[in-house]
Length: 228
Image (cartoon, rainbow, N blue to C red):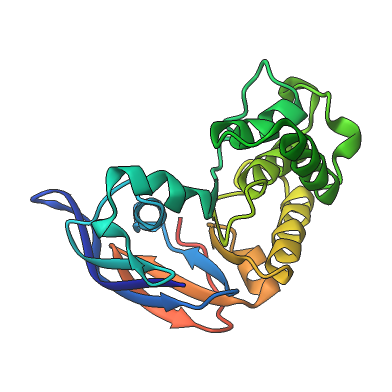
């Protein structure tokens, strides 16, 4: 599903964000991406959905070398990849329904499809009753679930989440992780970048440990000690 071969990313001659990354993530895997701030976690995720390009190396998503995609093909790649960031990035003047529906309007879905899929994913997140709420009327956990709903509404094969629990207390953090595990159980490939060692160690999934732009450990049921 996600393959990287000798991937390097430099922002200048003396700043190397990723250093010779080689990895293979199978379809349907759940993977934690851990490491201290500046380890390269966010950069790695941005490369996967072509928000950035590697300095060298090859990245394949579902067998396609994404470095060879035309500009017109990139939006189609991104439809298959849902992305959730730590800072919620919800549109403040839009309701929960409108925030989620926006992802479908961008791809010019029909009115009926927008109505059906948006409500379906809101119900899946347990937020159907909050469809008319504005972001400032929702809790932090609810806002994050709306972000996840928006990332899922196009039925992506891959879900990338960058510090999805970073602004939440431990109880809400675990609730969000249960949502991500449910999504994984439906067949979605999930990657979670996190500093939260307690969640990583509690859930015992595959752990990719980055440090200084390198993968220093890849364990199928790994543990992690926060280095921040």
